[in-house]
Image (cartoon, rainbow over all chains, first blue to last red; front, top):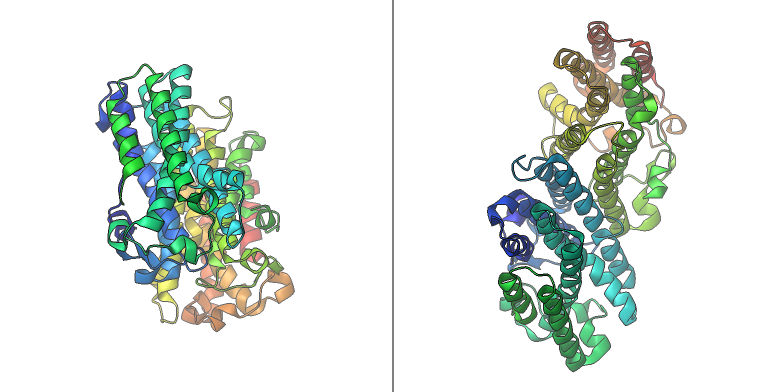
Amino acid sequence: MLYSLEAGGKRIRPLLLFATLEAFGKDPASGAEAAAAIEMVHTYSLIHDDLPSMDDDALRRGKPTNHIVYGEATAILAGDALLTHSFRLLADIPEQVADASVKLGLIAGLSDAAGAEGMVGGQTADMQGEGKELSLGELEYIHLNKTGRLLAYSVLAGALLAGADAHTREKLSKFAYHLGLAFQIRDDILDLEGTEEQIGKPVGSDEGNKKSTYPSLLSLDGAREALLEHLAKAKEALAGSGLETSLLEGITDLIGFRNS
Amino acid sequence: MLYSLEAGGKRIRPLLLFATLEAFGKDPASGAEAAAAIEMVHTYSLIHDDLPSMDDDALRRGKPTNHIVYGEATAILAGDALLTHSFRLLADIPEQVADASVKLGLIAGLSDAAGAEGMVGGQTADMQGEGKELSLGELEYIHLNKTGRLLAYSVLAGALLAGADAHTREKLSKFAYHLGLAFQIRDDILDLEGTEEQIGKPVGSDEGNKKSTYPSLLSLDGAREALLEHLAKAKEALAGSGLETSLLEGITDLIGFRNS
């Protein structure tokens, strides 16, 4: 569990949660438990996705993947335990940070974002789509669920902790939708253009796995254009939120133009 | 997810929860969500335990195991999603059944029982102990965690829903401790004495997997004796609880003398 948690990574989900709290003028530290829970769920999903029966990846964040180091059985169990512990962390948020009903909302939201109709659903569709030419709609379904839902939950969790009203939550949810797609398009572009050193895993693995990607469906130029469009719409949603969103805008650029 | 949930099984954990509610004079129906959550966690653990990299079992409850039917990737994901959904179910218990703080207690308890220091910890120790001769203490550690914790949680969940006081919870927890060990000893005896038709999986698989068992450490007679001792202590704890425990006693006998 610790090996994969401590392997680093971009910590984009915690960053999003903290920046959302900042946007509401709240102390980012109040999101510590929720941020850790989200990072645990993200890490579990990486451990399981890397397994031989899934994406069969040997390298992640520049290090051998969990199952390469500890074997498949332990890797599966480490993922299971990280997922299980994430809910404990949310239940343990101090009362002065969130009352019991907010905590239950965070727990329900994490289950929805990570479960069969969220992240696991997206990964399942991804596995089933391997070796097939997907439509753009199918590709978006996969990414909105596989990656987008947990990214969006990171923003939602911040909003729930800050006690956001429905209008603000809706704007932030629109922001997170476009941010999630931008994130994935950038990922696909990096898989073609990046170096192994930059991205911490072999370049061109999507092509090797015969995965449909934004560049394969839209061409590289088309993917770049779609990326810019989603980044613009993400910022538009932020601008309409009435919040102090400079940090969230910065993260949006970071996600859109990152090299790793 | 449905394939394994609907494969049947003894439903001992829901039964324990309902019988605990009965012991408090509460409506068993108030335990429906918690019972479903527990059965989902139990089912996820069976799906993952049966995987080729774990126990590599092809038959469970008389049916082909999940990965035999759907493949390894889908089996892992089905388990992940069942675990994830179980917490959603607990968060969704109607307010008139349990207030927010009881629900958070149920969620924290399920995470503890199922997690790294509970069920997953037991399964990890079980995998690491394969092919080794274990001490009785090591064997008990494995079973108290791998099987016992979730069985005990089924009783605890009933007690939490019923608003039990600390003394009663302690008696019930002692009951559950001995019941869990009795359950596992009976399992080990059945693996030697049962028929494939009775137990829904191949007989002698422990021996085939070179697993330490109660009969292998204590002899078959010694295991039978230990079984009777734990059953007696379980009933003793019940008798001291001050509750109407006839149903729980019946389940204790069912577990101790079951043939499947």
